[in-house]
Length: 76
Image 1: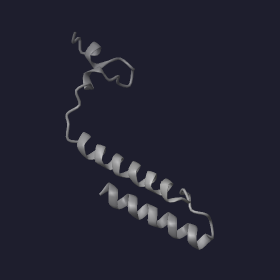
Image 2 (image 1 turned 45 degrees about the vertical axis):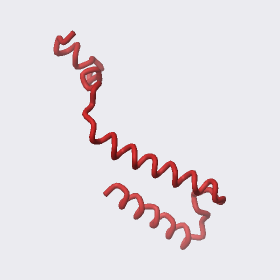
Image 3 (image 1 turned 135 degrees about the horizontal axis):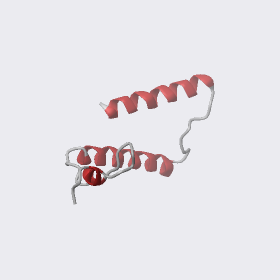
Image 4 (image 1 turned 90 degrees about the vertical axis):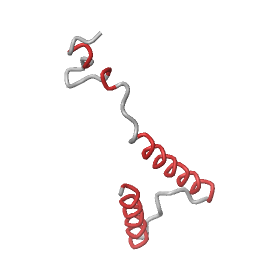
């Protein structure tokens, strides 16, 4: 779903830039365009793999007070 929304937003920005006569906010050379594609594919890949793992460091994260959950709960 995120990828479809991203593609829709990208197409919308491209269409608006074209109709308004603005330069596209992207690199004009093929190497730059490939870099943008590689970064996007890498982000989507990591997002898919990382979302299936359980968070191992959740007890170490601070809450609204900044205190680690393990200290508030009295866990050593």
